[in-house]
Length: 486
Picture 1 (tube, rainbow, N blue to C red):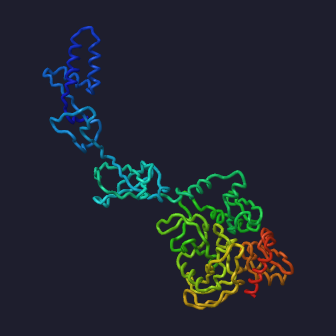
Picture 2 (picture 1 turned 120 degrees about the vertical axis):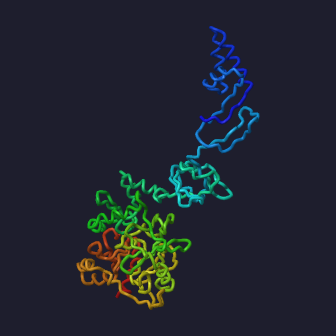
Picture 3 (picture 1 turned 180 degrees about the horizontal axis):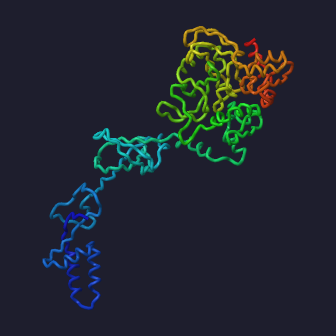
């Protein structure tokens, strides 16, 4: 509303004179038509009345500001001649300003309109300016591989100036990015079809085995929801501590996602490996799929479950011990199939190669470790190294063999004691179920499956089919374990 300039216009002069003449004719409608003509020239009624009262003939048009703001540019001088459509002043309201920034192409999936930002400028390094992302331009700069974006920033204190450089910080919760957002949305709805629920859950929360690998999954009510297990033998474990196992299926929530320390990850180039403590002092290398890194942590897409204990420090010592001991590394975890999406702390990976006789050396926290084996072949060529060779480990100490029977708990031994004396001896020497890698006795009395003139013990009835499918290979593996533990 403030006046900016006055302009004399012959066209305005002629229109005002016509209005005067029309007003002098009584009973005529010409006065109204003439007044409308003056209004169409952009002159308000108050200005028209002022011109009609003035007798000097200087009918000056007052140009007033149409917006609140400051004059950024003045493009005319006093006495200048102007034409229709010419810009006279550039006025901007600096209460809110724009910051335009460049976002790398790889980060576009993590931003969205309406996102809050914190911005700083060199002039006021301690002052944080608040704003939000208002526009993502629909084109990419092919030279820099960046995308321009615009932020609306509050500048009520008038500290920001046009032309300043600013640094804008966007914070994107990992659970809002893919694939975590899709996972979070899917967990908020309960599928009515069992097949859909089984596909979504994917793995058994007790053993970590893929659902369907031991026959039809078994449904179980735990912590107020339906949970699917790989076999009936898992019911006892989840019944004893339902919340523990149900929580292992929640890798994404509104508060965050499952994460692992950066120091726990060994990046081989083709794979990312994390060592998980299966038992006290016994570690297993698992391949994991990781998301973005933030504040020293990697978001976990697959390979681990909540509750897994990982070697947060010393993972490279474990890896070095593996590489220095070829016998201990004969069974490469990749050769036994992709690890399932994590396993419980008291259950080995269904497809992993948990060594029955781990080597003792200087690993993480000087504990007995199950080293990550060297590269092997396909899933059908997986083998177990029952008797690691003695050598110098990462810590410089000699590697010594230990028996696996010491890792059976009193409860497990009590279940094995229900077998005949001959079967008890065989089960104690075998130690593990060759299908799930669970310790015998952890799911009740071990079941005996006859293979020719020998026998294989499994943890539960759900594993019988797996033995029958590949009995010769599993029997060879079990005999190695018995020889090592004899």
